[in-house]
Every structure is written in structure tokens, then in C-alpha cells.
Length: 123
Image (tube, rainbow, N blue to C red; front, side, top):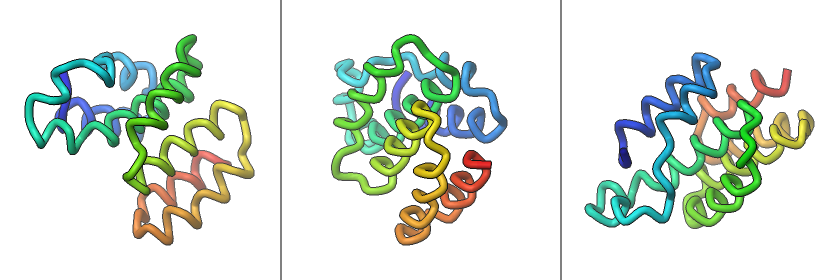
């Protein structure tokens, strides 16, 4: 599915350290026509893409590079979702310094949960 339900379910699974399960529920391609069925679906697409990127990075998905490329494009124009995709790429590279540095970006954006999550992921 698309939209808020799988997106929020996936973020909860990521919070609970279950990235494989999160990736399973984020199986809809970002170019699927379902995304254009409503303005609500379109609004959730950057967040879905960011969650998909983080789930792919944390689970070591074999399609990680493709997911990161698509998520980067889908998150463009949404500063928090874009930062989430950058963090996923840093996690994929094992760049703990970049993950930690992104905490300041999330703080500046008012995304305090994600700021704290950077610190947790970097430790």
C-alpha cells in the first residue's frame, strides 16, 4: 500500500529495531500510479521513501543503491525527508561521524526525535 498507514507502521518498526519488517511493508515502487490517486498519498511519498531508505540501509538490502537513488529524488523539496535519506546513505556507508553530524540538521529543522535517533544510531 501507499500513504500514511504503511509509512507510519514502518517508522514504528524502525524505532523498534525491526528494519527487515519495515522494508517488507514498504514494497510499493515510488513510481507506482497509486501514489497519484490522492493529494494525501502524494504528501506521504517523501516520508515513505525516507523510511524505505533507512529500512534498506539497516537491513543490508541488496537493492540498497536503487532505493537510495529513488528516495533521494522522492524526498527532494522536503528538508526533513531529504536529511533522513542522507542519514540512510551514511548508515549504509558505515559513516557514524556523518550520522552523528546530521543530529544538528534535524535539530535546526525542529525534528527532535530524528535528532535523538541520529545520536542513538551513531553510538
